[in-house]
Length: 212
Image 1 (tube, rainbow, N blue to C red):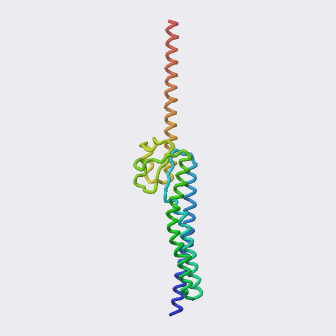
Image 2 (image 1 turned 60 degrees about the horizontal axis):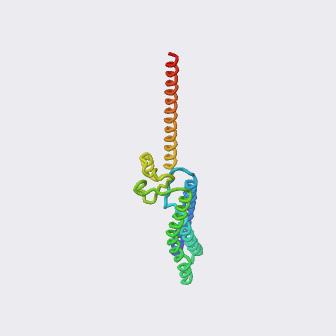
Image 3 (image 1 turned 90 degrees about the vertical axis):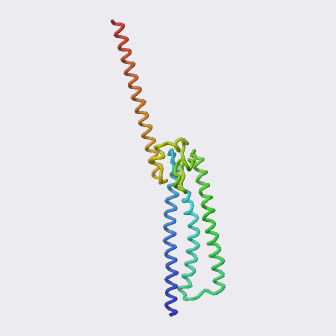
């Protein structure tokens, strides 16, 4: 019976270790990916970029996972030895794991505000202004749109594109604006050609009148 309990404790402890390792790997991967996307957007110079405040949770969450992983390894060590933790060791766990875990949980939210504050400062420094929540992404609580030209916040074409807050919507808006500029340039060129034709016709008629 004792051997069975030891085996069960060992399996539980190792499962916690494996779970935390997998969770740490996923968090680091997602965190690095989202940070890369966010930094690319801030310095891209595009007319509209998307920011998600939830991105800031990833870095802070890594600390929480690391502490929980250390706790899991500590418990796995006792499971391998087949020993039960003494009162002194339990106090050690309480002091050096549970209290830091609580502190790390608080740091998740502190880091969230600090990192988002840094992102907002960088976006403002690069010439972006935040759109009012009522203008774009009203239903997406953690997402916000930042623009070079505040008029884009109320542009009907932009509002049609920017709905979910996905990073690709920024590229779609950029392509739409480029196409709009191209159409405007083509319209101006047509008007210039038409004006040139009318001027040539007027000059031709004036020359004909002189000859007549």
